[in-house]
Image 1 (cartoon, rainbow, N blue to C red):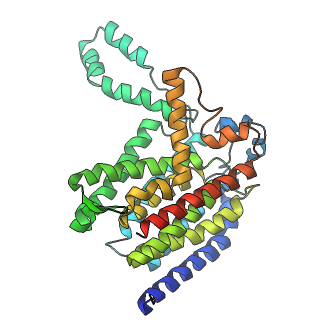
Image 2 (spheres, rainbow, N blue to C red; image 1 turned 90 degrees about the horizontal axis):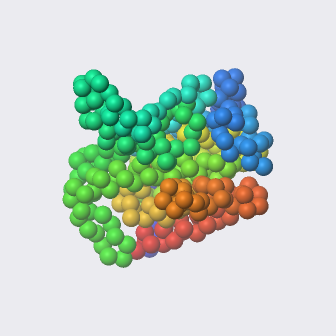
Image 3 (cartoon, one colour; image 1 turned 60 degrees about the horizontal axis):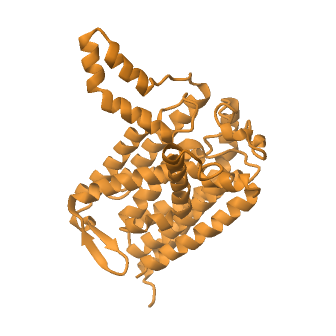
Amino acid sequence: MPISSESLLLIREAIGYSLLATIFSFLWAPLLTKILYSCKITRTNPYDPTLAMEGRREKIGVPIMGGLLVIVTVALMTILFNWERKFTYVPIGVMLLSALLGGIDDVLNIYGERRRNRDLKHTLRLIHVHKNWGSKVWLILTLPWAIFKRTSLWLGSHPGKGIHVHEKLLLQFAAGAITAWWIYYKLGDSWHNISIPFDGFINVGWWLIPLIIFFVMITANAVNFADGMDGLAGGSLIITFAALTLLSWLAGIAEITILNATVVGALIAYTYFNIKPARFQMGDVGSLGLGALLAINTIVINKMVLLPLFGFIFYIEIFSVLIQIFGRHFLGRRIFKMAPIHHHFQLHGWSEEKTVMRFWILHAAAVLLGVWIALY
């Protein structure tokens, strides 16, 4: 079937934006590196306990927040050249909100002070012994919130100086809610029908809202967990956003096609500098922002069901963490030597390069399967 001149023009334009983003990112990467070094936004032992592992000590002193290279490039180029109220302002807004959350966390983990979090047993004891009835009633009313704060710490690995897990989850919930509002109320009724591979569409009604919130939250955190080895997150994201560029082009959504292609170009430059030994690392500012954008751009082309394939290696990483938490807190033992799972293989003797490349290959195969299914 011949490609129409309009479709051919769109893919040419998308490739052009990808190349432009690559060039622009390469040009300002040295400036970003200099700024991060001068501000001492670098990995330290208290910030990252995994640096004590053999083979990871050379990462001490490497700048984090390198993900700004992608976030700033994509946001700037989209605002200047691809700003369209219907399709790009919410994805970019949610990406920037998530990146801001990650950036604050990155900075606080280095420059902040350790924050105390009251133990649940302490709260229960205060309820029992407190003589002030007003304070006692307040402690009882806020007990569910205290339980949420303490149980959310199971997901945390930072030393307690940055944004706490329950705070991250609330802000990520807000980002997911903005996305759900946009898709459900602003894009029209046709977006209420979820595409089911090989079986057409199913209208889920308002259930679409919690589904979108869930996928935005879990995907953002999944990419964040994968940002632990040089090149792993960047290379995997290139594969995913390249696939999303193809699918959004086939769907005929020009703005999302160009946005995905722009992300690919910026990621090419980022990954060049992130290959071991990395000049800088992504940090939460990049992983949370790009993870949220990955979820949004997949949902908006109605491929939400295929997110576990397009984000395959990221989902493997986050589920390895969840399995490890279950094992520690309910079985009393570790399932993996260390989670996320890339550290498990590292402790088994795999080199960082071997782990990253094999993860890339597995991820590429899963994404290819996702594209094949999406074309039906």
